[in-house]
Amino acid sequence: SHKQLQASIKRVAELVNISKQPVIYAGQGIVQSENGPELLRELSEKCSIPVTTTLHGLGGYDELNEKALHMLGMHGSAYANMAMQEADLIIALGGRFDDRVTGNIAKFAPGAKAAAAQKRGGIVHFEIMPKNINKVVQATEAIEGDVAASIKLLLPEVEPRSMEDRKAWFDKINEWKKKWPLSHYDRSERNGLIKPQTLIEELSNLTADRKHKTYIATGVGQHQMWTAQHFRWRHPRTMITSGGLGTMGFG
Image (cartoon, rainbow, N blue to C red):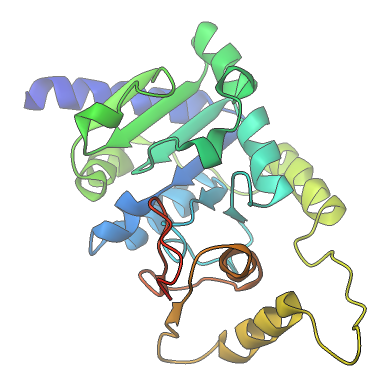
């Protein structure tokens, strides 16, 4: 009911307001809604919360934003995964906690699980498909429905936080970014052949400020992960790839 939803949203807002190390984990639900990316940006800006996305959520958040943690999971950035492990509050927006995101579930998100037990954080799950709620991880609070519509209800309830308020958390994140940058790989060229990662970085730099969206399609496998990691995704629905099923030859 609407009353229950409002009460649930209020409880989520309370957790957002008391959290010290929140992180937003955004999945495909964010890019499925026309205004999902804009509302995600508003939430992240208002509360100064870092954002990591799944393979299917890439482009839902501007990866050139200082709060971007880029992709998480098995093939994601180390700093996104560190943030997920140490966060006291994980705000899951339209993601399903796929095994490529969580890894070993028993060892996943110890910070948020500890915070949930102490009523100062946890995992809040915004999800449209009921079967995905409490399937992989126990949600401290679950908000069923279209993620964009739910963020709209949440926004007026959360208190603003500046980057200065979150200084300790972002200092930690920036240390991890320095320690484990995605750009750190062996760049030596063999027989004059450039590395695929370098090619994708270069393509990313050349297209970063174009007025029009750049659409990229991939197959499945190593090149798909390099594309996800080394291209800076700025616009929703620009990466056309087979995640989930992972059909080789798709590109």
